Image 1 (cartoon, protein in one colour):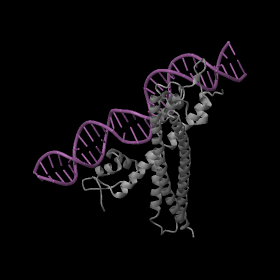
Image 2 (tube, chains in turn blue, cyan, green, yellow):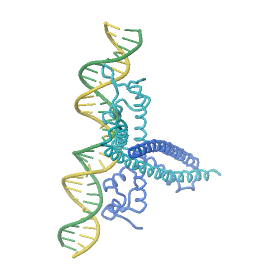
Image 3 (cartoon, rainbow over the protein chains, first blue to last red):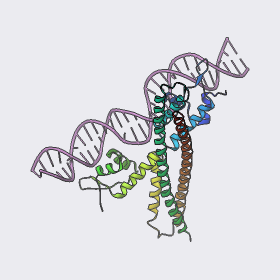
Image 4 (cartoon, protein in one colour):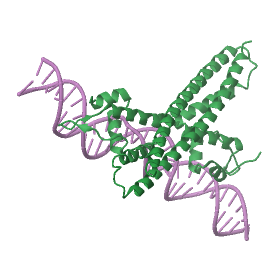
Length: 141
Length: 141
DNA sequence: ACCAACGTTTACGTCAACGTTAACTTTTGG
DNA sequence: CCAAAAGTTAACGTTGACGTAAACGTTGGT
């Protein structure tokens, strides 16, 4: 599989190398494979994840801690997709999955709330915009 | 007109008293009238402004500096609504208004960009949610 | 084989956005 | 009228999210 060194990743994501390592340290980005000498080798998947993180941070205004919660929900789920054979703790697993589901439902609700507030904000800004355009028109009839 | 002391304002906005004073210090909130002894007296308008600031901060993820830019755009405009009579610098005023208009148009565009990215983000989360609900259904048929 | 360019860890520095504490004055209910 | 509650300014402390510098190892081209 094609891999990238950190400077490449830095350029395509717009993040500094420091930030990329920092995100790994926080657990936001899964650790990469390393070369014999210890250099990180990123895959396309890492890059996608970084772009998602940037979106959540800049556009949605989430803190890294909140993003970590989001990430861990997915991680937990992916982890559960592996061993489906043991039927004795299926009860356990089901319960855990239900908790994850609840977490996701809450996240969706939070996002909807944000979108609604954002729409309201946009509306107010647009009204101001309209008033200003009117004011301009009144300066030169 | 009805006024409120800072503790009241703190309760209805959810901000701490420190934060409210801090926002005034930054220029985000217009200074209030004071009592003889120096206590701040807030109006309903102050409260509305604080709520807008919280929205911009929490929901849109704007920095206080960005919010200050937004606020000053409005302030500039309100300031221009006063003296409409002098026709000599009407040219000046018109030019200034046009700059404000351009600023607002950019803000609107930025907001639209954010809303789109947010919708995309929501979509991905919803797909994950659906997959998890399916997984749960598969644990107990 | 070498060295310039790039990578790594470790540790301290910085800046925004407040929290906290101190020292003091004002307001207010009994 | 007076103590407790609430307000004020000023100053220093804290936390999140990185920036920066040092000291060192790795890679790749000539």
